[in-house]
Figure 1 (spheres, rainbow, N blue to C red):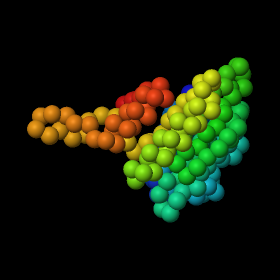
Figure 2 (figure 1 turned 90 degrees about the horizontal axis):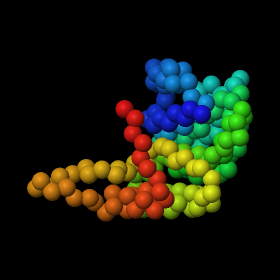
Figure 3 (figure 1 turned 180 degrees about the horizontal axis):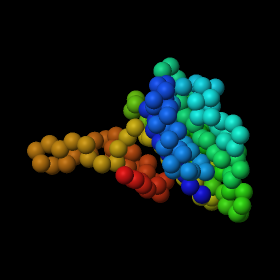
Length: 179
């Protein structure tokens, strides 16, 4: 099963929509997770062509930021929406041709530190609920695991990075970077 995750950083402009759709067509995934649509549920469904073989589960944006979506090829997979909040959505994905299923958590992290910590707590609880099953966490946490500042030749990790690293380690997560 092929997954695609993409922080689209808004998809109001027609040129941007065409670029995104072209990317989807080239990747040919069975499941697509999008973050930061900056669109409401109905608009997101319309823009991403939820019809025919594609289905979708969307989280409403807040103000003029956010917005999440999980789309899937309904000929290949069955997806059951489990729960969501403004910063995450969790579904159970079942591959129709094989006995394979997993939980998928799509994340778009807030920018405020207090809300980031809440997202990490929520995600940890979700992972605990499904701990005996494969769980895939994708998206944009708006946090980094790498050193972002160097002072006097010494790399220093800020408290937020350290807390995020603790969250990642305590949930046995690992970062996959594709360039």
